[in-house]
Length: 378
Image (cartoon, rainbow, N blue to C red; front, side):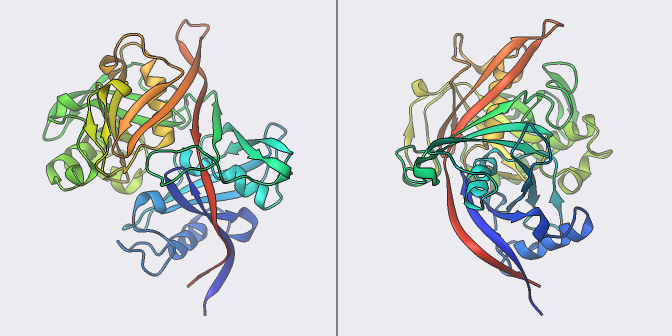
């Protein structure tokens, strides 16, 4: 007999996900994981018997509840459901899906909309961080139409500003989890390679494209079609995951810590063509980057990844800082990616130890309600 559950589908930024009220689904644990796998149709490369879209950016879940604290309005738990493995990963957050949490809260009446603009304070339980979502609500209704465009999404929509408060140490507890802006990792089958491991909104592992035989301008199909490159990137990521204590054996990273840390290849600004054939002028960007998501190349660039990149950019000695030109604007870092470009910024201050502290990280996204109704699963 089929089972059913209330569900909404939202596009958030360049991702798409299922949204559930926490009270409508099983409690956290194996029962919830089993439910999410079944409703998504995983593990199956096509997710044909579920609501997943067969790629990591459309195999995401947001679990929402009324906030229990005074510093937020709603609580949001993110789940990354593997497409081809029986794995649900709760480490880290998704910035793109975060952009749809506010609209969902307004559509369901969890938060009352103001006339004009509504600020919603979201507590992300994965990272225990607060996100401020500013949403246009003329007449007390969510406005989805607008003139703001983001690379990777056709057309334009109303802009949503996301501001992440004190984003450092979202998963590991430290902005620089190893205590250093860069480290050399001894990667099996490759040897030593310099990386920067930075944790701001999500932990990322950055490597210079030139250090691993890449340009940083490769398109997703080119990377995903090269088993050597894919294997090397996952080996670097797995070695970093072991260094962070996420796994005891780097070879287990794809199964035991599939979502984080996220592998990112960076290079200096250069002209390139996007996946759709559009030209991006190197003079219009500060750097290029290629992110990995669940062992495949991200079709664009994850928002949390961009925010972490902006954080890494302002820290002397990081791999990211090394590829940037002098005098870049930390409030408007322009990253070229396979879908075009993404612009993000950070605000910084000096800590009592003299080190850089990221006080805010912010970016701009769009979101849209696609469906509200009932999901059926086995």
